[in-house]
Length: 473
Image 1 (tube, helix red, strand yellow):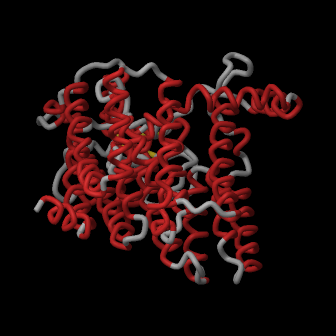
Image 2: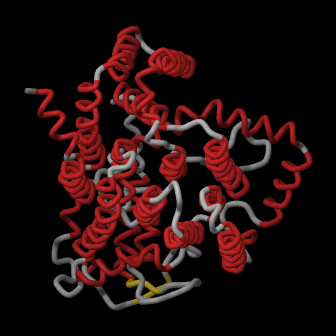
Image 3: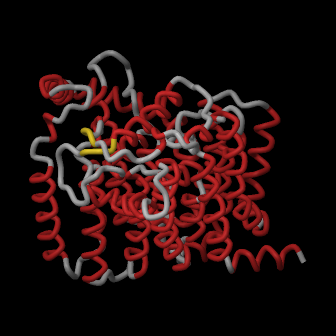
């Protein structure tokens, strides 16, 4: 009876996904305080600006809106508890004033308009019904959710590698980002569309799907240029239209160069002189450069993995749910290993993804680090790599599933290696080791356990949401 029930939910996973992704997303929207997501206050100001359409430069914003975001942001940064009830009362400061000033956008001034079009529309639409800033704030978050649900459900309904996408989309980090004003919400939503059009006809990509995939990479690269190399993946799978695709990539590159012509001089933390000095040093000292990146990957990979799974805003909850993070990480490794096909084309695809990861590290080092101050690259967050995981699906092959039963020995060896790596990074208790070992064995040999654990993944968010409420309120 239990087996039939599990099979039923597994076969109808898209409905299960739709119900719980809406439920937990709405909970994230209203339980996560405004601006608890990294840099959300600056993203919000772009969405709440007075300009209807803009390309670049300064934006004007209602003075009360800017003060509203500044007040709450300062409380979060000083770890003060939040009382949102005060922003619903009849105080004039809680309502639109029509008194405008320049928006403080910090380092997000260059982010494009379209990344905020959906929350901006939601924020503006709410003004038909309310003058309260906080109510309008939640309206913008809800409209972002609509875009995410539409794109992600389309991908899950496609039923290709859905276990992989289902797991990624239910990670607390993912839900935290997509249900905020962050530009990452837009990026994750349209990356779901990229995966949909790419995987739909992966064996023989149509010209239409190639063009859509190229446009999506262009859109996310204008937001974050480090993702531009991901367009090379489409080149690997479009032999029939190779020349046309190369021309499209040259055009995309030209557009990016035009858009970011002054990128080196953009004020992040390091000025152009410091950036030039760092670049020269890294190029002229390859041994030191290799050591810097190697130590960063070696020492920080554990933290990046935790942050990809579920570090929400300024709240660190790893120690509270340590074993849950480990089991989720192992399950992700399992899905990737089970589906990945080892071929020359896929090795190149993985190389492109790793190249993008290195470019992310290099960009952070160039913009925010001091040369020689630390042995590793600082200020890197795991969420920067979350987007790259979606592209691993390009290396999957459904035919591998038929041969997987014959690879149990190799699988056991692979996961035992991961088991020992975990112990290398952090001393794990004997009880936790036993739990992890039993989990690996059940994952490999028990079909119904795999289905059961998959169905339980969304509900890890209950722990995180409780932790958010306890931490902020």
